[in-house]
Amino acid sequence: MADPTPAGTTATPPAVAPDLGARFDRVRRANLATVLRLVHSDGAASRSALTQATGLNRSTIAALVGELVDLGLVVESDPVGTNRVGRPSPVVTPSARVVAVTVNPEIDAVTVGVVGLDGVVQHRVRRETAGVPSAAAAAALAADVIARLRRTEPTSGSVVVGVGVAVPGLVDSDGGVVRLAPHLGWTDEPFAAVLASATGLPTAAANDASLGAVAEGRFGAGRGIDDLVFLNGGASGVGGGVLIAGRPVTGVGGFAGEIGHTLVNSVGQVCHCGAVGCLETEVGQARLLAVTGLDRGQVDELDAALAEAEPGSPVAVEVRRQVDFLAVALRGVVNSFNPELIVLGGFLGSLWAADPDRLEARVRSQSLPGARDGVRLARAALGVDRLTIGAAELAFAAVLADPASVARAS
Image (tube, rainbow, N blue to C red):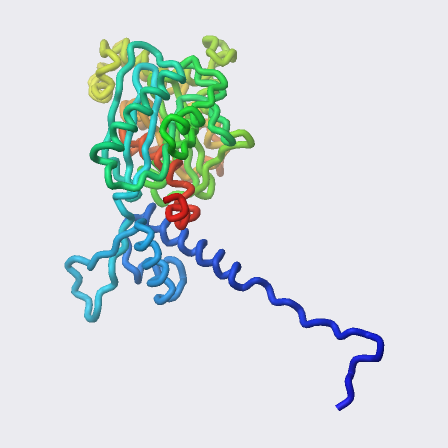
């Protein structure tokens, strides 16, 4: 047969196929992450349930689960009490021996926690300080507690993936620099980097209320809801976090969600931020404690004190005043974000519990039709665990995105 290539020319080589091995590896890693995130956020699941949830076939799920078991990220066990005919599908559970360490600096203490990949808070240590701690002092105190925990239970024998820090202030999303934490008196403090250097562990920091939103959205009152806004009230003021389509809204620099600085009273007090009439200047825990005669160590008694207030009493008047200003802020939340759920934590939850009908009615009457349709208010469900779990999610993020990173780091 004659050569079809004309004389003086060179035959074009066949096209080179894409690197199928690299593509397969990317898909496998993505599928590993999908399976790990499912059991992390939703809890223990059978292989058959994971097959149904992911759309992957049974053999692929078996291989992925096997790899996650080898990495130490999940454990498998036989189901309990099943009556199904045939071999039962093994149950996959996130490992409690893979842990994150958390740090929450406050105006009077530094709290360090340990959280398993199963979302359970295993340990919490609160070290009180003589006064408001500096960034350096808070980092040193946290590092000392972490070192002690790593030498003893509960973290000895565990895989510590990193440290997550929940800061009551503005935190740069790129480097974990605390740009401003007014109640702590911190400005432009590289807290994450300092703590990472002191502990030798990967460390990330973020705003505490934003992390609270993630925790309540994944494990608390907002579980299963994609669009929610979380507001938390505490001794350091009012913070907020927003989840849209299940993802945190952080803004270009990581500073989104400062709902505590929403204008609610144009003739109100001057806020520490320089504006007039911010939500956290008109609605505050200190005022509620003062009017009820409680001190800061009696915050847990606030619900009962507000519920027992007689109509027309100073307590009832203050509750109504704060509820009305909170409603103004929530009106803006509803109109701006159109959430399915607004979750209220800390003393804001106490305010809601004291007069839920008034708060909900005033929010609904002031919000735009359409935006207000279907929105619900609820109290935060995680209590004191909220910031600890939220900070742990920050530390777990790298492992959840790339489970094989545990092997590379070890």
